[in-house]
Image (cartoon, rainbow, N blue to C red; front, side, top):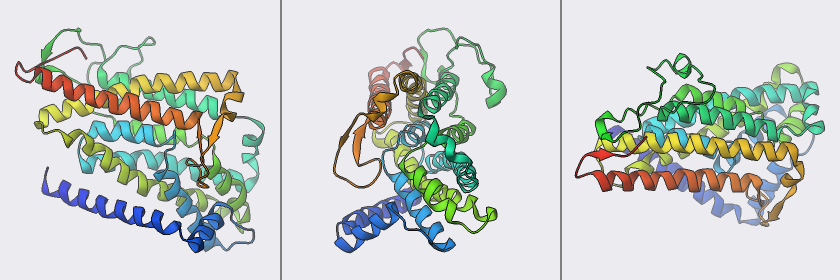
Length: 338
C-alpha cells in the first residue's frame, strides 16, 4: 500500500473512531434528547439550525445500513480496490444523490413533493436502480445483455461484446474498470427513494425556510453529510480487497470481478424486489422493531434484508469466492470464466 493510501486510511480510521465515540456518548440521557430533537425537529427553526440538523441527518443516513447507499457504494468502492479510489467512489455516488436531494427539498418547499404522500415510488425506484446496476455490472464483466445496449458509448470503453467463455491467463481476463460516472448516475436515481430521513428534510425542515432561494439548502447539506460518511465507508470497503496479500494484478482482478458480480446479480435482486413492491405493496409494511430510535436501525424490514443480501451475500460472498479462485489458480496463473 502506498504512503498516500496509508495516510488516507489512517485518517479514515480516526474518523471512524470519532463516530464510534459519538455513538457511545449518545447513550447519555442529555445527548439522547439531542438525537430526539434532530429526528423530530420543532417548528420555527432558524436557517442555521435547519442546515445543521439536515447535515447531522445526512451523516446518520450515510452511516446506517440504507438500501440506496451501502450496496452501491460497496460495489463501486470494492471495484476500485484502493483507499483513494474507494473514497472517490463514495464521492461520485453522493454527488448525484446530493443534487437530487437539493431538488427534493426545493419541491418540498413548493409543496410539489406531496406526490410522495399519494404514490409509493419505492418499487419503481428499486427497479430503476436495479436496471442501472445490471447494466454497470454487465459492462464490467463484459456480459452481453438482451437489449444489446451500446454501453461503451456511455462509458467510453472498448468493444462491448462478450468474450469467449474460455480459461485464460490472469492478465488476459479483460475485466473493465469500474465506471465512476455510473456511480453518480446511481446516486441521482437512488435519491428518488423516500424514507424517514427524506420525510424530515422535505416535509418538516424545507417548508420552514423563509424563501425559495434557501429551499435547496436542507437537501444540499443532507447530501454533504451523507457524502462524508459514504466517502469513509467507500475507503473501508475498497480495502477489503487488500486483506489477503496479493499482487496488484490479482487485487485488480478480485476487485473488478467482485464489483461486477455484485452489481449484476444485486441489480437483479433490486429489480425483483421492486416489482414485488409495485404489485404487492403490503410487503413493505413487514418490519420487526429493534427498539432503536434511529431510522434504518429502528427495524428489520424488506429494505434491511435487501442490504444484507446484496452487500453480505452477493458482495462479501463474491469477494471471498474471487479470492479463493485466485488462490486455487495461483500456481498455474489461470482463472475461470468471466
